[in-house]
Length: 461
Image 1 (cartoon, rainbow, N blue to C red):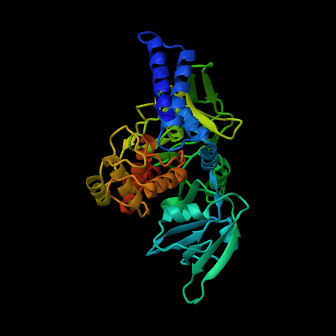
Image 2 (cartoon, one colour):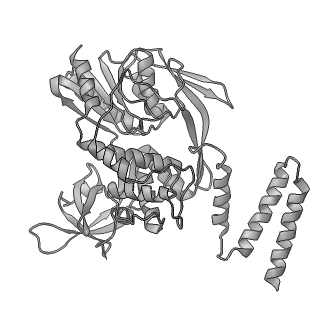
Image 3 (cartoon, helix red, strand yellow):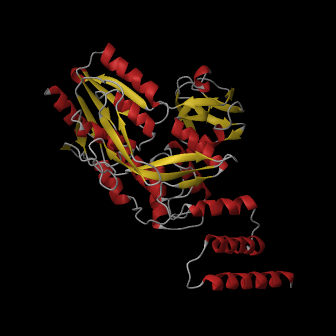
């Protein structure tokens, strides 16, 4: 009887709340009163108990729903993960792994990581974590088990070829740096540099690469590969452009709504070396600033395909309780005042790589084309497409379109590794990143016509 009375009272409150503003513009005070009514009803009548934290996090999330996909609220744990990924590091033992039958094989320890200081070798089979047998456990679940807070111990059990007993090694989790730059000297003394992300730790690694290629190897030209680069820090991309352009050249214009617009100029004389930049349809945000501004100033030749077209600027704000939020505050234009958002950077030479493997997965994998989010309990085509791509990338989860907890975990792991909010929700940003990652993998075995074109340009100088 008490429960029925509670429902009746709340129903009357809802009717009163709605009736008072029906046909009128709602004020903020009226809206907050209505929100309190809805929270009260949900907490007292939903069939499962809801904590204050759960329902308030949902309210905070909802504030950002009308905004663009890049504006989000972070819970405490989400904000910590986001901050780590955007700064180019995580806390764990630092070992690269891949599936191997029912277990997991070590590819290599990461230089400077806790694993690199122990007797862990490529080819070792990881069989246990903290005494738990990993047989049948997916790669994503194993990674989650291995990672943790800095300074905490984790015990790993390895099977090594030629050794009968299991090798038991206990490590203290530590900060593991992810180097966003790889580089080498390729044919005809051309320098090649790939930038995977404009993360906070890029500048130091970028400078080392330039020093090695230009000062030590004396390369005659430089190819900078930004394909599949999702962007990153605005300050970092400005610093990298400083190294390549003359001083006092415009490299970025930012159009704010709340404050005065800004124009950024280079601050130092950069290198005088022929440069070709590679982009594709998954080069986004900061990578588009980089390519577009070099193109505008005639400093580089751009080769590949039209870039993604994300021309907005986000700022991240911490809150006192450890949570935070990221919100779109401006749009940017290249140094030559070209718009990027929804348009992208058009290359000087349009070159498309061909891949039978890419054609196969595009034909066989379900499309992810709706703008609705998918969560645990859903069964839909987008979830099927996500599951197919996650498995293609190394996960081991079901492929029937049903969104279960393992799918959620695999998504969260993928999001964390790709600088996305690791919510485990299949949203538009995650769909785009999954498609980009699967496309990148499918393209690994083809002849790189875009790179070949870049080499031809530099060889013809």
